Amino acid sequence: MALQATAHKKGFKETKLGWIPEDWEVCRINEVFKFLRSNSYSRSNLEYSTESDGIRNIHYGDIHTTYTTGILNCEDFRIIPKVKNEIKVGDNYDRLQNGDIVIADASEDYEGVGSIIELVNIGNLKIVAGLHTFALRDNTSKTVIGFRNNILSNEKVKNELRRIATGSKVYGISKYNFQKFGIIIPPLQEQKAIANCLTTWDTAITKQNALIKAKQQLKKALMQQLLSGKKRLAGFSGEWEEKRIIELFDEINDKNDGGEHEPLSISAGKGFRSQREKFDRVIAGTSLSKYIQLKKGDFSYNKGNSKSYKMGCIYLLETYDTALVPFVFISFRPTDKVDSHFYKHYFIDHGLDRQLKMIISSGARGDGLLNVSKKDFFKLKLPFPSKKEQTTIAQVLNTADQEINLLINQRNQLKLQKKGLMQQLLTGKKRLKV
Image (cartoon, one colour):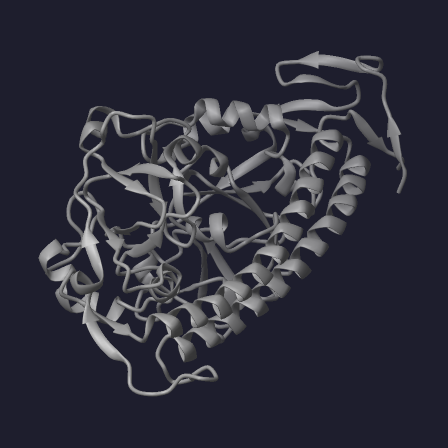
């Protein structure tokens, strides 16, 4: 399908969302879409099932992390959690249909504001929209199936969306503001052409994701064998010792010295992240002086529970020479007895979860953090092979990481290509022949 360039402004009209082709229009969300009734079930009310019965629920967290393209093919219903059987789901929620879109109305960062999916191939499944989502249905026939997931992808539209997002640590969009929000609508035939074009990239991204997932599963199996000592690498034998964390690491209590150090946060599954990148600003405020100062090679334990790390998560600082982290984290520095990368993999593989569960005194505190005392934390036990064996195991797992990262970089290149293409097609700067 050939791309046909358009001259700047020739055949275009100026709108509040910038210059668009004369035969395109700008509409408010509520002029095109009807808001459907969604529910507020929390993650604890949901479960994953290989059976197709029951009520499936689109959770906003999955829109951010699990559904990696704008189209959610419901034939793979196993990735959509269902409402637990013991919970009675009434008729207060609208069942989703093919072509309906679901938008996350909350995000931890600006980039995730307005993340959107469009459902296809629902078949006989019963699916509802869940917590922190807007579910929309085109009741005007102004859009076509396959295009609707792109209505918020125009860069000017995204910027407007970020402008109406409110919040400090979590950004939210109100229904009142969103229903009046402007979107760009091309003619139907052009929508079909755009959707078909972008589907090519979505297909490639989906295939790449499958390769990444397979490689990650192989690495996980390898970690479970090597980090437990069940499988020994050539040249190593004998029983492993056990040591308490405090015997292998030193607690870090160094406060911010006032130098130029990047304030960081920790995200489950991602590791250390700049607060500026995650929140578009430093959220520390006046507490920055109390932040703990780290250097490359240090570890921090974020006591916040999450879907993927219910007991909190521990990460190794690798990408900054120095950094600052909240004082509520438990931070520790390796002694010369350990290979940091061995324990990096051990912590990522939930190695401490069973012990952490035993020392958590109750549920999450008011700030969302688990009740874990430093005293109890540093008493937890770690496997302790010889340092040479630690290093050898770490090298094997680091090689697996490199292979995964290569696939991820290739996937990210596909996403960048798609993003660049969208900014051409969804603004009318490039037109598809239809």
